[in-house]
Amino acid sequence: MKFKIYDYENDRSVDIELTASQWKELQTFLKELKNPPSHDYKAVLDSFNRICTRLPPATRLTDKRRRAIAKAQKDGYDLEQVFSTAARSAFLCGKNSRNWRASFDWIMQPGNLVKVAEGQYSDSAPAPAPAPPMAGNPFDDYG
Image (cartoon, rainbow, N blue to C red; front, side):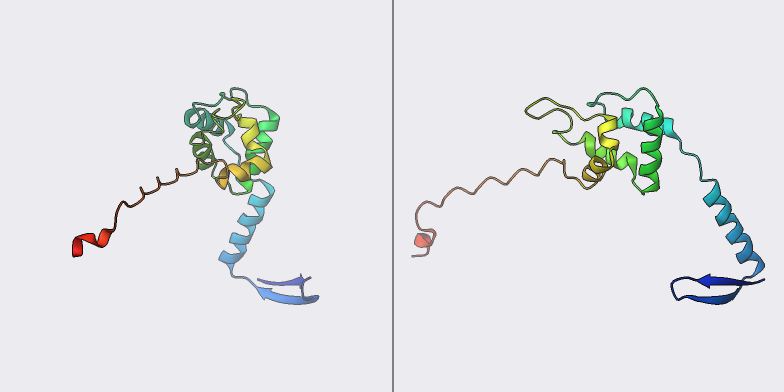
């Protein structure tokens, strides 16, 4: 099948030819764009509650939460990984000066989601203990 498409980037028309299988693949792709796959919102909430046991549980699935989940998944976040990162953060789990704990809604806010995903709230590795100062001259034994 031959098609004429307009290449806006180069401001010109282009003739292309698609095989039957390419045409079918293009139609399937366009259909998926119109009807995106549904999200399993409850599974995400269950995942949060299973992983983040030290954080307040998320029990209700609101429209705001559905939108946040859909946006995060569309943006390519692995939410189970984000929740695992949050669960390992002492700060997000209440070890801070105010005993504040992160909530599902706080984590799912776009600005916070990227910080948690990038590990900005992760506990820093403890600094190695400094070596004790040397006593005496180490070369004394070599006479």
